[in-house]
Image (cartoon, rainbow, N blue to C red; front, side, top):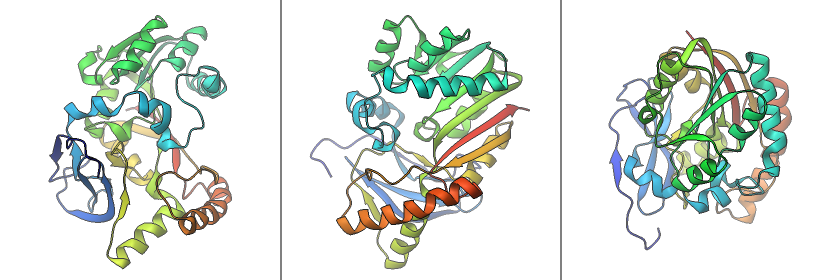
Length: 302
């Protein structure tokens, strides 16, 4: 652990996804200004940190370091604030949005510095954003974007207001994932679309085997890094969570990040084993839509 002051924390005695209290310890924890052990709900399968940074501590975690090094699980080769690095990706996203509905009102939750919103305006969307990081909000507002600094509930959008709500690498970071999805359902128009893209890290072949192996050995996987992921989704638990919030999944596609720069501290043996397993994992995910470590989930308001 670092020598900095401990983060303010909260401890969960039940699953916020389903309310279940049967929480099974997982052999996984973060060590960063405190200890943050993971559990799995035996009722709905949702995995999460039993001890989490308190909501008031989250703002300080998402500063310059996060957007330059740590966003997208540290697997991005560039910092967020370089526009050209994400133009092609944003173009593909907006093409996907256009296949769902004609440009209307778009909300991005966790919009960071606003590049997607900026490109959406160029495509005819009426785009708004919500972002927790003060630095990112400042960047977005310098682009002339309408971005609320804070969380989704604090933005107080009207009922049935948006045609599409996008969440990219954000739901795993929020203090209450179920409450956020319920708010998404509220602000969506009837039959409006919720579009999520993000990690399902513990679903991959390498991480599944690691969790089983470490559990058998009686010791945890220790991540010495900020506890950004409060929730570790799997496709199954994510679908259940969406349905609970009144959002009906219409498409789910998994993907696997190819072998490359491993995230976190690993020995040469661990790096080699992960590269081998990832090499096997990539074609399995592509063909059978299983064992991915990222997912795109599209749902409609019931």
